[in-house]
Image 1 (cartoon, rainbow, N blue to C red):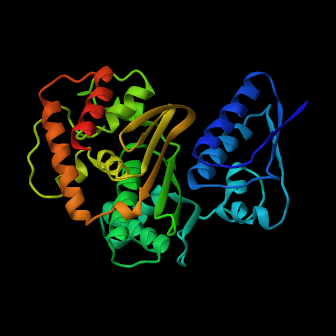
Image 2: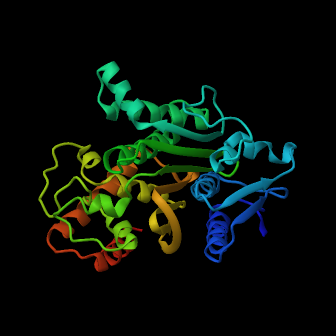
Image 3: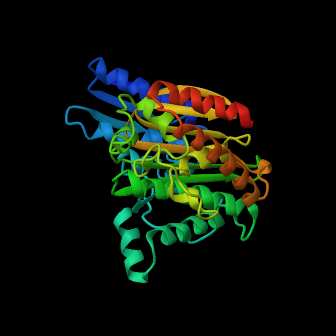
Amino acid sequence: MKTTLKILSLTFDTSLSYCEEIRDMITNGTKEIELDFRKLGTIEPFGIVYFSNFVKTFSRLRDIELSCIYHDDESISYAKHMGLFQNCGFDIGRPLREELPTQEATHIPITIIDVETLRQEARDTYEQVGQIVENYSERLAKLLTSQKDTTLVDTLTFCFREIIRNVIEHSQAKKITFCAQYWPYLKKAEIVVLDRGQGIRNSLNENDTLPDIKTDKDALNFALLPSISSKVAYGKKQKRKSDDFWKNSGFGLYMTHRIAGMGGDFFIASGKHGLQWTQDEKKDHKVRLKGTILRMVVQTNNISELQETLGEFRTDGFALAQELTKMEIEPSTASLMLSKHRSNFS
């Protein structure tokens, strides 16, 4: 028997909710699900990426049949343009992008970049992969904002770079999926990046200097702490050789979540757990995800000069990192350490 689920919007909250509904249907024995998009309203980057990735995953199950109905008119044109249906696995709208847009726009549809393509470009141009990621990130920021050399471009470039680099260095994913939108009138930008790699818990457990991490929730709390990484030996005293030392020392997620904390919103999820920071309020979410998804909402009117801001956050981060080296941190205390730290510097 077919069960119909009406999709009225795809925002942060509704996309999580719809995915849980679909999962409950399947758990309860539903074999045929129809997604009704005929009254689809607001859609946002996270909702588009998370929901479509979830649907695509379940559509590949042999005994589950997923279909959709929609009005083929202007009301659905934006969703088609952003790649919602194609990423769900429905042959509706334009094919998914595999390259960056060439024209400036306040939105970047779902774009799937092959990690090996980035590495090959680095080899072809005799550059480091990090420089290629920097170039991509700057292009993304300029395309999204229609600006050139501004603090907003610098900030978004930084965020794109750290998130993408984190995927390449730690996830073992073959592809990176991203989507973004900038609302000038709301003074807000949203960046979403997803990978279907090994997940944060598996990544951190590759580092034998860290305690064994049993849950995805503990892994997320660990990952947001400065100097915690699958590549950095925990507890080893580091020397600050230059201003950009933190770039390769487990500071990427820490710095990006601090930037989003300036009046914005930060969400990261991996496996079965999601962690959301809205200013200084933390909220846990239940998710179902192979790999990792990260969402940043940046309140653009709160952005000051980037170097000054990063300098402040870096100083805070080094203070916490030094505190961490003096103790044997356990998964149960990682969350408390992060919450206490944010309160001290808010």
